[in-house]
Image (cartoon, helix red, strand yellow):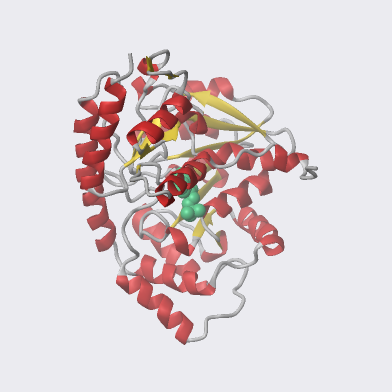
Length: 397
Ligand SMILES: Cc1ncc(COP(=O)(O)O)c(C=O)c1O
């Protein structure tokens, strides 16, 4: 008998995590799987950050923490917003959470009423639409296309806005497309919302430092929508700290207070040791971040070259994050042996079972013509994985 709530029944499991699970199971059977489904840097956390965590334990930072986060960490985040993004968020406008995922859930649960609309450009990060479901609000998906590098236009947003629209939720740099919005593009989007000051813009900037073309631009910089913007960020991707689980928001004070109230009833403050580590990360300069970025840039160029050699793959050079999101619809209807590829999920399963390469279906991200490939893995793995993918795809006719 299944007695779980309707709320839970309506929720999908994260397909990225599901793919990671499936490939781990095959690996456990001794099969050599190359995992391109991973959403985290393959680097270790830099030493100075680990040392700060060790010191936190020795100094007995082992008790409950303030719900909103330690004061020194919120000051470090406030400084980061100022120095790196030229944004003014005082420490009392900042809430630290157990990962940016919790920060996003906090904000959406605090703002969305039942049946409110949340506009989300597709492809989107898997958890957005699921968190919206948990809030009993409705995701309104705005489809973008590969020719525009999957970026939404101000006109598309304008057309999607109705009196029920409460939130616009997007990320730049993007998971899964790797695209990023220029300052001009963000300004044009901000101008749309300046005309609708009852709509909030949640800007997920977790990949800000993995930007191959210049300085990160935040939609929070535009004064005309400043009171409507919530910035979500964290240390997971920039500092290779996914397991430490520290994310944060910068927001108007009333939204920060609402998130504190919610978090106070669910998880309380984030881990004391992780907060001290995050503080060292944010205060420690960006050298390690830039080193990682250069490694990602080389891998990106390699993946692009190898993908370009495969028949039927449509893609572009992504400007940020560590993903490609190629259109693979060319293979729909094609077969080999008794296997026919009808959709992106079939293609991912074919690649997993026949090429022993794990990828993620685009349908998880709201675009069923694509798959997501992560290049957060070594060059050797990339070369071998793309060779296997090419061989498997060339067999389909
Ligand atoms: C776009 C995006 N936002 C947020 C997150 C969550 O990050 P965190 O590890 O801080 O919860 C991820 C992680 O994959 C992500 O890709």
